Image 1: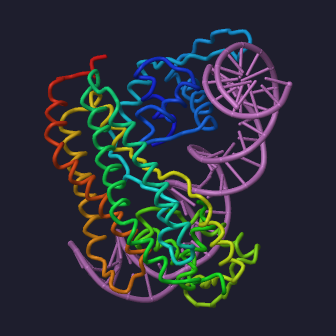
Image 2: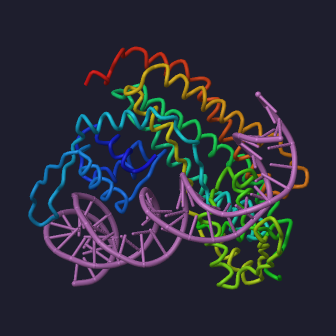
Length: 181
Length: 181
DNA sequence: AGATGCTTATATCATATCGATATATATCAA
DNA sequence: TTGATATATATCGATATGATATAAGCATCT
């Protein structure tokens, strides 16, 4: 799904600036299944404006760049609905951590132990964030997505906790595998 | 992790052409945590060759483009080891499906039911593929990664199976939410 | 027999995205 | 006072994506 579509989705929840959309991707509930930086968001909003899918209210501020508050138009809403009604592509999980663990025999034991511990802490932290959300005012969709995230992140954390020692032990069996090469 | 590094990783497992590396990303054990298409792999190999991290054996074939078999050099091995020894970035899960489900109220009930069913089938299929691998000759790293994948994909499939009906039911409560807008 | 599509194998190209950087100011903490 | 964080926009080079081109052999379907 391209950044333009995701921006439209955020704007169905209420008017927002590019900066605020970015924050949704960084901190809000969107962070668990999507992402985009300024370098994609600002051009996307500009293009959406050119296409008539959003309108723009420029609020002059002194001592700060003018705020550009975007609102979705009926045409934008229609375009968004059409986009998410398409059969979605496959889910993608990308992990530099798993790549490193795959090549465990290239790495010293202590580095592996630290990497797994860090990843456990990271998954637990994200999980805590998801669990601590107040879901009382949410619709069925956001709740579903939140609980899906909890299921997946929880499974990852639990797996890492249960298999950490086994991996670290295996990594210790080979004293200095590769450095001598 | 950039494509260059992942290509080096594949080449530590044995010599390969760009085409074969692609297949690893599509079908092999790498598919669950990384990805790259021809458009990234060929330029990456060209650059690695220029940097002295791989060598290249061009095998002339008739009735087919010449095969370019790449081999990793000691310098490439060192570069790869250094790259994976860096603290890895965060794991990323991207899902157009979850985006659509988040905005469930924009979609007709039957579309949601179909989308969830398709996704369950997809996760079950991938899970079956991971489970049916013969792990007997594998090292600790690949086994760890495979079982991690099973834990996560299994959790996703189970969650979807257990929460499908609830979501579909909720989607039915609102008869024609948005189309009239 | 002929058509269709898959597999092998490379490569390019327009578009999209990423990640870093630039610009300015206010505020809060060390 | 120095540095970090937050607000807010924007650009730019380097990468990555996804589609397309080329070209032959081989299997399958009608």
